[in-house]
Length: 251
Image (cartoon, rainbow, N blue to C red; front, side, top):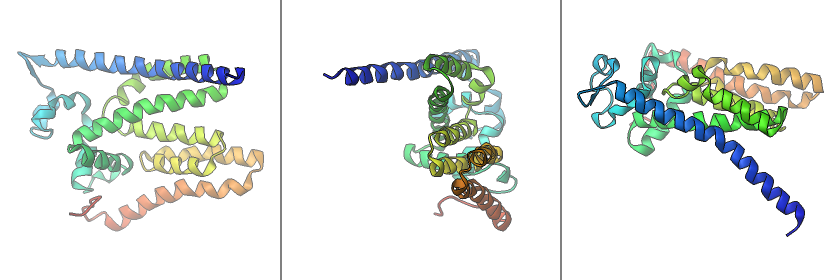
C-alpha cells in the first residue's frame, strides 16, 4: 500500500477521533445532567415540574420526560408547528417550527420532534465549529476550542433545551465555514435559513460583504441577496397574513 494512502488513512482516523471527543463529552454531560435533574424533580416516584402545573396536558403523558427540555418560549415552537401562526406568535421565526413540523410528521409527535431537532443540530454545531476552527488553528487547538464551546454553561443550557438556538447556531457557523471553503452559494443559503431562524442571522452577510470587497470578488456579491430574500419573504408573509392563522400544510 502506498505510503501516501496509509498516511491519509491515519490522518482521517485521527481527525475522526478529534471530532468525536467533543461529541462524546457533550452527550455524556447532557445525559448525566438530565438524569440528575429528573431525580431532583421526582418526588415519591413521580416526576413533576412547575411548567406541567401551569400547562396541564400540553405534552402527552407518555412523553412527560420532555418537560426536562421545555420551559418559557420553547413551548411555543411545537404549538406553531401543530396549529400554525396566530397573533402574537409572529415573533417566533419559522425556521425551527418548520423543522419541528417535518420531524414531528416523521416521528408521530411534535414535542419529541422539537427535542430531536434541538439535539441533532446542537451536536452538528459542535462538529462544524471544530471544522471551522481548524481553518484558523491546528487540529488539537481546534479540539480544545470545541471542548470549551461545547461545555460553556450558556451554550450548553440553551442548546440542550428545545429552543431555536441550536438550529440558528448550526446554520450560522455552517454559513461562515462554507464561505471560507469558497462555496459562496451554499453559504448564502445557510445564511438565509439562519436569518429565518433568528432575525439577526442576516448579520452574517456583513463579514462576507467586507471580505468580498477586500478581495475584489465583486461577481460573488449577488449571492448575498439570498439571505435578504429569505428574511424579506418572512416580512411579506407577516404583512399579508398577520390576521390569519397559517398552517404549514393545510388539511
